[in-house]
Amino acid sequence: MKENSRARRRAGNRAWQAGMVAMLMPFALGTAAQTPTHLQGQALAPFPETMPAFPAPSDGRPDQRPPPENVMPLAEGFDVREFEAMAEALVHNQRVPGLAMAIVHNGQVLSARGYGVTDVHDAEPVDAHTVFRLASLSKSFAGTIAGMLVAEGAMRWDSRVVDFMPGLELSDPDAAEMITVADVLSHRVGLGRHTYDRDIEGGAEYNALVQRLSQAPMTCQPGDCYSYQNVAFSLVGDVVFATSGQFFSEAVSRRLFKPLGMHDASYGLDGIQNSPRWAKPHVRARGGWTSLMPKPTYYRVAPAAGVNASISDMAQWLIAHMGYRPDVLPAPLLSTLHSPIVGTPGEMRGGQRSWRRQRLNAAGYGLGWRVYDYSGHRMVFHGGAVQGYRGAMAILPERDLGVVILWNSGSSLPSGLMPTILDRAIGLSDQRWLAIDYDYDPDEARRADSTAAHAPPPTRGPVAGGPASSTSHAMPE
Image (cartoon, rainbow, N blue to C red; front, side, top):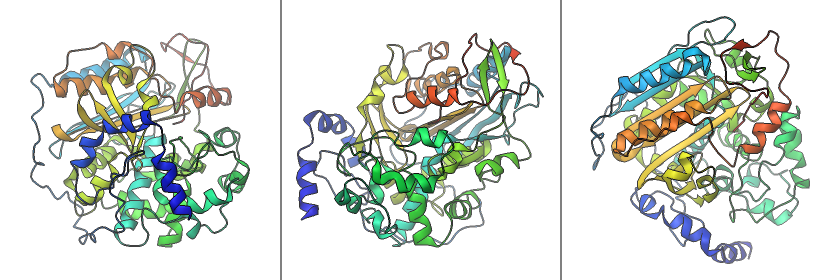
């Protein structure tokens, strides 16, 4: 009876939602048959119960396969050295303190370098092995490890979360019984946006907030609407523990970091502080940049925001998600993770000059990844930001291109590197994206302000040369 009522609710979703995700349909239907194309408002194929078993791990070296079919060459004028010069210009005169960028193509690393410094007060240079906090780029790891367990038959995408967490309660008891693993990973649990994020920022513990989900108001039934989460998203960590017998961070480290050669990657505050080289977070203060010590807050929701990694690590992460490590991530799993499930039209709004507004024709969310129509080209993407760290990663499957950028400040300026590189790869006309210190993301706007208000005081004064601002910005995604 509950399943029938849920189906009726989904069938009654508003027409504009169906129209939005329909623009992404050609991308979804072009993937493997096992891919879930369960887009909101569409009567499509169900999620697969299982996928083929993984082959035995190799010796850890990339299993280079031929380029995927129907890959188009990069547009004329695509020049990695020019992009490196742009990154160098961003750290000149400390417009941003430090930055790392990787560009991968055809399974090869074209560039993976650091620019600027890890700390404006110490001037240690950023290199390819400098560790940054990934913030919401971490969500892609959560979706991937869950998919591996689905592939092995340990659970299903439509498995109910209460089967692994019997004590889970929501304000609507029926809703708690309905939430699936896929709902959690695609932000469709039905809670209000950013439920209990302010409490995380205030120092609350994750387990206590899970208990308080029973008091949180519902905005829709599970599966019926998109509403970005960090606390509720992290329920997947409990599911992974229940199905694998390993703590979430241990499972990701053993099954993803190690086989993919992500030697600098870790989880948690101790992980980044124990790294041989790591970038300090920076905020704007009195006309310059000042460094802070990282805060433990969003590390408490590890599946949502707990990963630390270097640009060398992230180059390997993109190579794996582009299909060049089938020994670890087989093609059917990647097709599943990278397919849109729910429309996210709010991402196409923002300022008139925003790249999201100018370039996106449609936007959706899959399983720990965003999926965009970027000027007619499919793009798999995620951004992240938290207390003086920001980052973005993108894959253009039809060009076999991946780009990831990490930086240690709240500035939006480096965000313009991503659309600049993507435009060049596709052959679009140049835009002055790097001149815009603004990158609108409706899922992160509120937390940008609230976390800044709780930023700890600097231990030393600001270093001149940063953007003129009297406000410290820190933007957890």
